[in-house]
Length: 380
Image (cartoon, rainbow, N blue to C red; front, side, top):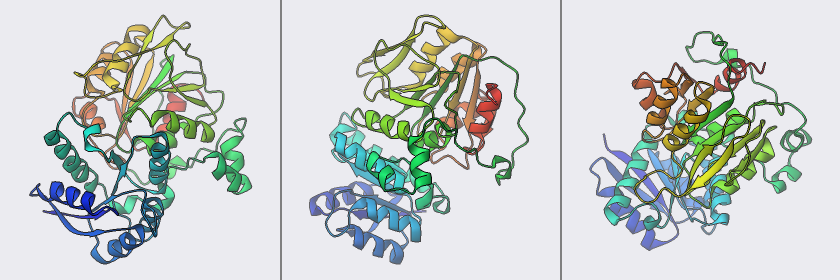
């Protein structure tokens, strides 16, 4: 079946370029284009595309507002085009908060070594997010990450949740989840660290998990999210505003502390050195041969050397299979590996890889993960 795509951008040159790339795949077809957000909202209603590609900065109505309106009235998988700048990162995170599923750099040379690879990446992203049921994405299910300005404009309840780190967030009634999943029982194992790997759909997934952890969470958390270099600092700052735990972009030589989540910096690799109790972060450049920067395989492998059987690792939604080999090493050392289930994953690539290989011991819906982590690590 051919997937129908709506291309939204105020640049006629870019619309033509994206249309040519998409139409060169026999499984994709651009059915129309829009020159601003207002027109995108109208055509999404009329044409019911399978996927929308969306620019952020446009006249009449910007891409963020358009995403929010489309997700409220005609939920559709949306792929954002973003500039790789700090401001571009903030805007892209706003778009994910509004309900967009994924983003890609607007300058194709920023995502690939050559034109052919860039074309394949764009086509693959469109096809991957098209597999996600549109009914699961609403404007209210996006990233609830408040900026300082957002917090000041929010209701007192929202503002206090975002800024008062001394109050433990309410855990939703997870037992009412519609997923067919048996009651979880903690293994009784002891742990020293929580490690989480994710890619496409990860910002939303991480927010859902980390915002449920109490301020006194007694373990350090290592986060590997596939993101460009300019994005990870902004993402860590947003998460830190919402979560009771501290969230920071990892820095070379930093001592790992309980109750803090360390986000691997984009474009580099996060490794661990030392021994339990005096462990430090090591940030390195892995060169051109490694596809993912950061890579879950590299971080997981590094963790296994120090924490051996004391790691609870999660592989969440994401394209590809990064994390599979690192998770295998962790499991062989006696640590625990869980995966997000297919139904709640935006892209069931990374979690499927560890599940299909028999590496994960549990495949969980995202709504179950926070409660199960707290129980497994004996926090509740």
